[in-house]
Length: 176
Image (cartoon, rainbow, N blue to C red; front, side, top):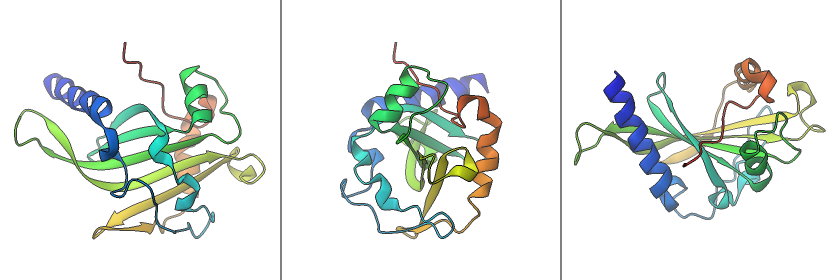
């Protein structure tokens, strides 16, 4: 298991360093015009996320996904400075990829297909019921994105375990 984690971390680090446009939607500019039914948050809210910076990568064992975590400049600066509260206008995007064994290096895993794009946005005036955060999830099925049909309250309850970090799981991963 220890060897697996080292290989996985190596693959994730390479992905972060070499990610370029591969992390983003295929045309690298447009996002679908989709909205979450309960929150009204739109995929368009993160239009231009291609220019956000990668702050971390995570591996979700329960989903078998590598997730790249990107932040807009407001959130990036706060995460990097290890602020205990994220400023108004912070946007954090999570891109979840399923993984395959890497054909050219069988001891490693590699990102395969995007499964989901999720984001959280800090707006204390609009999202008063969830400590100022709005949550959105867009899943990819059969090559098309669709707004997630689940209850966004599950996002709030999950993120409540890191309330002391303003509901943010991500810590800045320094390269050196």
